Image 1 (cartoon, rainbow, N blue to C red):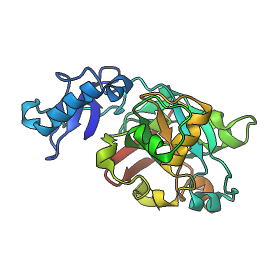
Image 2: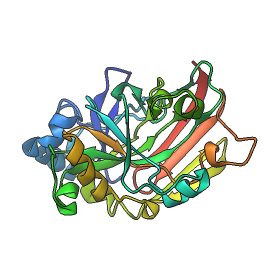
Image 3: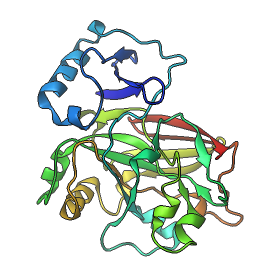
Image 4: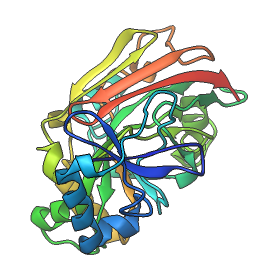
Length: 286
């Protein structure tokens, strides 16, 4: 299924995109798309039944209707750094022996077409198309890849927007360059795991002002999705509605030749992952 949330900021309602591409209202079936829904097998069965008979759900006029993040009430956003072989090569980073972890605050998450703000004082705002993993059941101390994948409710497109000077030139941890306002567009859809297919066989692409910058595949991941989920469960409890950004392929501004083409107000980012939909953001100054 392709689940999403539509409407004004703070007043989104649940919806699904049916097989014919028609937007359908789910608000009569479930109150929202969130961790509580993903963890509730009975409620998810109601949604699946509704998806199997979409004509019984009211159609929504998509034109002019904002698409919000496909998930409400996100508990935490856990991110994996340097998780693609080609990205490690382009940035000159050593291939990690274990996953590199950092966090983004849930309030960085915005809709897939919402404005992205260039922070005040920024000189190195960068793009990163990423596969987002959405957790659907509580996971701790997982012992196998099978258990890890069973904890995954679905996948989405994520843009891990980063300010590289804040991240790398101001001391401390990466969080300074990762948690600026609007720095995590998510969506348009939460595609359930049964529909998304093999998470290690998805193409990822990103354009800036119409120029293709990133064109990669999750097959290049150093630590595959199952290993990432299993690894994280050693160090923290993963709960329904948590999001994991699993890293970006080569093609970011930081890895380009000088002068590096960092983002400025007026630039347009477009990004997509096979089967998971497409985003578009216009940048403005904060």
